[in-house]
Amino acid sequence: MDNIAIQVTNVEKIYKLYDKPSDRIKEALGFGRGRHHTEHHALKGVDLTIRQGECVGIIGTNGSGKSTILKIITGVLNPTHGEVTVNGRISALLELGAGFNMEYNGIENIYLNGTMIGFSEKEIDEKMDAILEFADIGEYVYQPVKTYSSGMFVRLAFAVAINIEPEILIVDEALSVGDVFFQAKCYHKFEEFKEMGKTIVFVSHDLSSISKYCDRVVLLNQGTKLGEGKPKEMIDIYKQVLVGQYVAPEPENSRLLDDEELRRAAAGGAGTGKAADATTAGDAQNGIVENPELLEYGSKKAVIEEYYITDDKGTKTPAILKGNNFTIHMKVKIMEDIPAPIFAFTIKNVRGTEITGTNTMFEKAFLESVSAGEKREVTFTQKMNLQGGDYLLSLGVTGYENDDFTVYHRLYDVLNMTVISDKDTVGFYDMDSTVEVRKEE
View 1 (cartoon, rainbow, N blue to C red):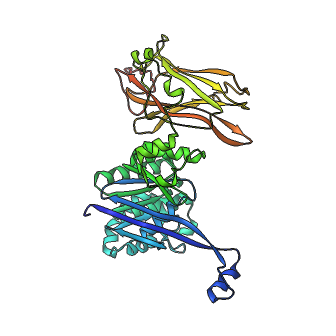
View 2 (tube, rainbow, N blue to C red):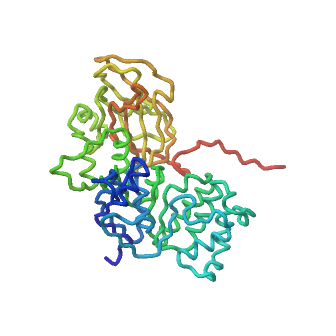
View 3 (spheres, rainbow, N blue to C red):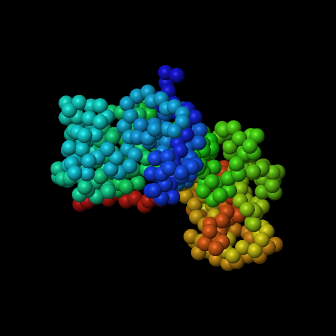
């Protein structure tokens, strides 16, 4: 237990909702019989263990309880039931304005926040230069913060939170307000914190950042913890929740699933349909192997029956030479009439970060209706500019019905793809630059 930074045990948070203010007064004074409120369960028996040195992401749809659990951990809110234990000094960046006096100027708010966290005036003086340098808002630091733009506000708030050397840093969506240069500075600080063994709890809708920085991800939905595990698995399940395709386990099996069990439950029998058998013996000889635990879901109004990759010579293979053209193939059977299906692919790295992808709507390549019984073969041909390494291919057929986004069939991480390269540059892909170095006379 010595290495546990945060322990949340069976925490519930219940809000009383009143139809009108008078109902609150009646209940407080004991007038009338019965209750005058309804209960909203923001959190329902959530358990969470975060160890020292971990970077843990919390994801979920709006209203899932992400911000509520962070406020309970930091002491802003008290739980209705359950216990929370925190071992270490917390610095939290929860909401713009939290902990700031809008009438004070920037300097005064730095002292106010530092004092609230437990620093002496001398200690704050020693950190002042680092805070001002990180915030980089110039002479505005001497103006009342009520005159700040949202960008300046978050720069100052994050500079205070990040430079007081906390043992636990908690951040809730605040970074989305800063500009791209400030965000890059903040994420660099995250990496420094991880190297120093600090604990980070991170709530964000930026799934790429969650995938890149987090060691583990917790998935919440409507106040309930659906699961926790590796970022890639939890992000895939979260995407299923977003489109209403997640199927909860039966009550008798309603214990919290780990990441592998949750993935299988959400797949709803993935690997048993025709698509799962699309890899033939001939494909296997060419090195094409389907992921045996792919995540598959959708309404099945259209079904991806076959899929493979070919190189620039038309040979089926998962190995593509960098700089050469390659083609992604998918064969789709239309099961019901669909107004305008969208065929798509996405390429992710092994951590689950989406690197690139496109679809027929983006490319304006197919905007037609289709009828039940028809088949479509879709091909995407492009030049391979990704750096050498292993990648995962996902495929999908989606569309809009009465302005509602609908998933007909999705296959996450269905095939591996290996890029063979004798020259790797910086980042995810090669700019394929033409370089000249000339001597000036």
